[in-house]
Image: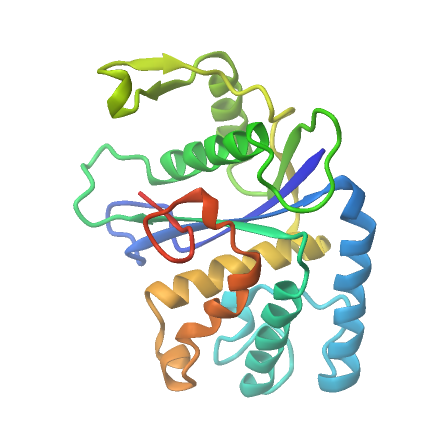
Length: 254
């Protein structure tokens, strides 16, 4: 079984939205590595407590974490250093895989559902990678996958997952001629499992990846000031570059 922990950055709205992009990042690991992953994340948090005074149970919600007021009582430059160390920690986990999705809202028709289209492609890429057994780390004979995400729009996600499990038209590749094939989702099981990010270190890791990707595309004033736009590049060793061959990081652009 593969576990995909997902979080987002940016607003999914299309009209009068405060953000021009919507980003999803999914961190994937095999069930056999779950205990090791949790131990590594917990040990990282303990080191951050010793080095910077960050509470082990303090949530690292990246966007709030580095705002001027901040979500924890530490200087802003220290909070930014913690994010830097966090990215470096994830990059060292060679059996972790991070798949990234970006919706650029400019030019989309008024009826375009940013949220649904981003998640639909995420489910499909997860399904495809499971089929072709392209995730790193251990494998079982016939692995399935499950999605675990922050507790947001769970009802909409469940309906989408169930619909794709019954009917999932995929446009034919050019060499196959016009039309589409119906390829219902089979490798992903259950509805997306909703968790509070405050209580889930793996979801906080996915949140960090999504935030760093958004800042790579559209850095805010603070990130530009500290030269942090390229902090996303720290994650390159664990990026799922098979997800897309159209850019160096495998980012799926919609």
